[in-house]
Amino acid sequence: MTDHQTHSPSETYDDESPRQDDESLPRPPHQWVVGESFQHASVQPDFTTAAQLRDRLRRQPPDQDSPLRIRPGLGVDDTEWSDLTSELLKTYGTAVLPEGRPPTAVPRHSVLKHSRDNVLIGDAHVEGDAFQAQLAVVNDTEMLRDHTADQQHVPGMLLIEASIQLVTWAVSEIWLPPAGHPPYYAVMHASAFEFSRFVFPLPTRLTGTFTRTGPVEDDKIPLSAEVLVHQAGQDCSRVCIDLHAFRPALVFAIEDGQARRTLLRAAPAA
Image (cartoon, rainbow, N blue to C red; front, side, top):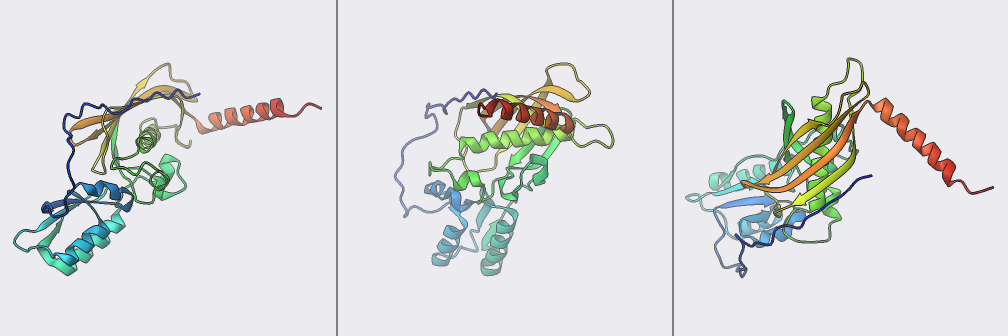
């Protein structure tokens, strides 16, 4: 059973103030291009979707003497970024300067996903028992398509899922099985979530560590994991997970046995 604990973002408003949106205000010479699922974030002048950017540049072409710099935010994948930057280079030359690239997602099987669109971490790597990745969100991931808040921030459930994916990926990277055996399988049994700041569709880094919580056995390793979500120099959320790294054969046998016993208990009385 999983114990979920959540905390709302702090309402200190230390760096926030109401503002009136005014389309007559000049756009900044630097913009973050975000996916259509984050179009509500474009009330901030520094954010734009690809469609909004194309439309604006058609109406007001960029100035060669003051190039517009663009960078990929969340919701933009490698293919979309490549298509957009190639198109803008052909049309406007060096008046638009692309910078950076979206993170490269980890293989979908490493985070137990059937759909590539639902992989949420990229550029992942391990250093000792520590691990990290970038948040890698494509526009069509189901957690954005089915989210109803329609606000500027990244949904909290997406951050939780990204943290779980990072832990799942890291278990198979750090805890290597004996030769000829499949990778260890992460099975969680408790979790706690804390949110201190909203996360916006900007580059976002997740960092994590493992701690052993008991003796290592042949078929399982008891662990706890802590994942922090960072953006723009701030810690935004914290996810703590208790888990076992299981040999797949053992955990699947446990699952099968519980399924059969549950069916027997659920059978109608004769």
